[in-house]
Image 1 (tube, rainbow, N blue to C red):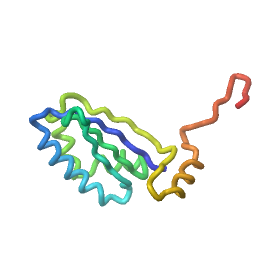
Image 2 (image 1 turned 180 degrees about the vertical axis):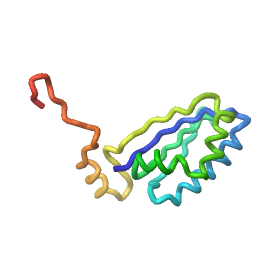
Image 3 (image 1 turned 45 degrees about the horizontal axis):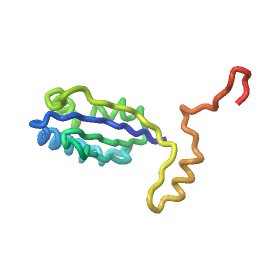
Length: 128
């Protein structure tokens, strides 16, 4: 099952151009990775220096053990402290359902899968 990372960046305005050059290099390189699914970069309509990266991969363990250590990420990660106003906000998500134009089959498949971290609720008497 895929895993999605939501990564929010608050960029120092004077560093925005450098940030985008470095991030675009990472996005262009990771597109060729076999475990890569998609990445979407969003900008806050009220603040052009607030960005959110929606990044989806096939396997969380591969991201942690392989992808984060790719050489093409090094310059970007090294420069982050000098380009951001604070720490990145990173959260991890697993898909429960996906609806896309022309994808009724995938929506039905996604809806039938139970995420591995979701277990049925059992009350104190052992009943669901």
